[in-house]
Image (cartoon, rainbow, N blue to C red; front, side, top):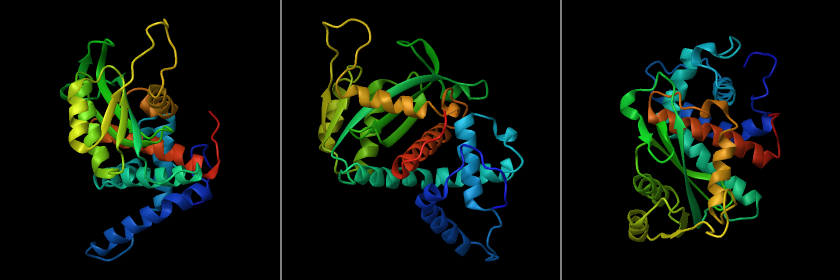
Length: 274
């Protein structure tokens, strides 16, 4: 990577050391399939720094500063890492490392589901949007499944009109595939019997956490606050304040990038100015 003045969003050497093995393995596997056998000239670290810059600042692709690789190149790598599951795998691997650092086992046994409806930009196809009647938001709905300390294990994005039950079933299916050790899950009262039944079929005990009827207004609800806090963590990345992505898969990938950024800092005890 050519010398340039670093941006606050750039990876430190310690954080890059956590990510580099996965991207290098992907690059080597891709090189073996290339007809010419010539290595690519693009530095994966520069590409990942560009993705973090977009994710953290919220700028459009074409506004990417010129000292990063070209926005077309960054888009190409981003789409490849998204479609081949590299970003999701990085998120999952770093979650295990972060749990070990907290004195826990790498594989979680309990989880929490949270959802968020967000508005979309004018470029998002109408076919992938919907209306959340309860929150009066036209846009998309995000669903995350976290462990009990708020680390993201599964992500799904759909039109905001998708029911909580449908989103919960998607997340439980993902969790069963990637985290088979999970046996307990907590949800809020928006999730009904369909999610509980799906959890039972997967061997996951789903418990509904009710608000305290004696308390009015905002108050912290046991277990549910973990998912809400995780949503707050990723919202520090301005690309996620609104959904700008054409594909819902890209929306999910942007959440994975934000989570990777947070996890790498958590593991290395680093912070970024807000």
